[in-house]
Image (tube, rainbow, N blue to C red):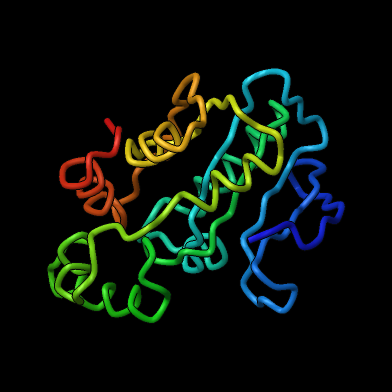
Length: 193
């Protein structure tokens, strides 16, 4: 995987440079980094590693907190000169079609973790090595990681990225996602109250 192209991207939150990473310039689903224009790599950088969630990020699904987390991360990245890395690993790494199948199982009473395993997948099949590669390309070695997921912290530290601190990213639960957030906390170890 390598940097393919960079462009200026003004957003509702602030001005970013968007950088596409892929193994080929023909890749239709590159990973991207949104790098705020005030990035300063001489200090620990606020970084959010966000896995794609089409239903939450694009369509504002209330089944999860993903879209709201992405919005908040972009807001904080603007305030603090940070970076949002957007990894194309939909549905905790199982893809959109399987994620929608998992939704159907959740509607029958399965929690999000059990739905994934019922479909033959890991509870969380995401990988963070690509985020490490992107951080290296950006010259970022010390970060303040915006996450509730201890697996992200562990993966980055094991790859030689110095996680100076974990910054919580808490979104107020809604009735439609309360059970989902409870499952993330109780079964997946996410650092939620």
